[in-house]
Amino acid sequence: MANTPVIVPIAIDLTDDIEFRPDRRPDFRYRARVRWWDPEGGGRKSLSNSVASEDEAKDWIDRLRKAAKRGIVPSLSNVTLADYGDENWDLAMRGLEPKTLDPYRAGWKLRVVPTMGHVPVVSMTNGITDRALHAWISDEVGKSSVKNTLAPLVRVMEQARRDGIIDLNPCRMTGWQSLYKQFEDELDNPRALALPDWDALDTLAEALVARSHGAYRIWGDVVRFAACTGARIGEVSGVRVKDINRFDWTWDLCRQTTPSPGGLVDKGTKGKRRRTVPIIEEIRDMVTWRLTVVGNDPMARLFTGPRGGRISTAVLRDATHWDEVVMKLGYHWLRRHGLRHTGLTWLADAGVRLHVLQRIAGHGQITTTQRYLHPSHADYVEAGNKLSIHLNAGRETAPADPEPTAPLRHLYVVR
Image 1 (cartoon, rainbow, N blue to C red):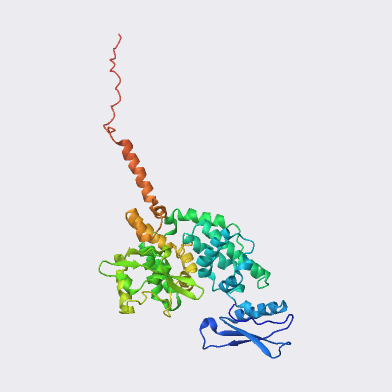
Image 2 (image 1 turned 120 degrees about the vertical axis):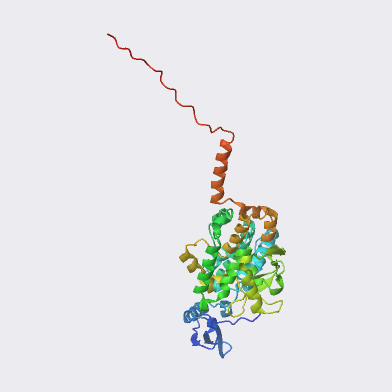
């Protein structure tokens, strides 16, 4: 690592203090600090960290106290997953063949580092790994690529466990293949993951705005725009003024916002596939309003957070209390990626030709696009009606012959 680590002598107690600083940002208002006396070199040494709450500050101090008793370098308490993995890569991957290392390194660089590389090693949890796995699968990452991503992550975290930085490896996941199969089954029918109609979308957007801090209107605009274009949240975050063509109402989709070790950054779209997406009439007034608000700067973002920052699916989830809202509305199955499924399902239902839908979606394989062509319930009913018509074609519908009448009988009177 770049900085020379501070060595704490084994079994030396630390003194600590926590300072509340109201003038700082909410996530940095508590400064936790530990200090100790160096019996070898003399003098006082210290290490500090700024967090959002007093409980987080106390947890950080407790971790350092435990680490100090084992002689662990305090600077490792704040080392990020990306930095620790890069520094200890060879040690964590020892014993592997070169043919195995290449896909492992690709999985580490392309997925682990952008998704969770900024998280401190000591802050890694099962939940973080679980959400990352869900995101990779929802983003249509292949099963073998997921395996080559989880494997190096587990090995790096196992090395951190051996180093004494963590007590348990939270990235060891069992049964993820069955979870992948579950997602595949769901994705085979994206209609099950999509909103049914415009009214449902509008209700969701308004509920998310109402639940957000200050009823921030842009959250609703982001949700409507994503669903009506079939785009990912990161792609919606990346749209700039110059990307919108108001002459024919199309969007030149050429970038997305993704997590990186340094925070959210803009880069090319998935698979580097630039595409043209139609902007339907239902959201044109909203887009026009946003273009007016952001001004004439061609590189201005169409959608930003309350402080002007980039938007990600995690930012949208936290700011709108997404999970709580969708549960109350009865959409417990709806994730942010479901907005993309919604738009592509609606386009398929509207009769958009398959090859056009593939270009709008940005799919590399047409088989991926075909999943959106699954029939709806109304299609099944119509199929039954068509079969009845087919079976009855040519059959005469003349009334049946009347039943034969009994022959007349004459009664004779015998005298």
